[in-house]
Image (tube, rainbow, N blue to C red; front, top):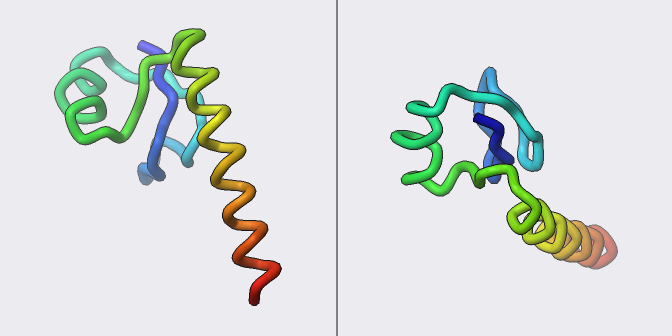
Length: 65
């Protein structure tokens, strides 16, 4: 099962990585803890939007510092 990570997970990947995991791991651990999204067109577009917002916020923080 392919998923998009929404948090950093040691030995699996960083935020925004598209990784393949076993269905049970995704269903029982990643999805209930909001650590990943299923990889499909809707979630990919949603995550790209959030990713852009995060980059803007980081840039503002760097400029203020």
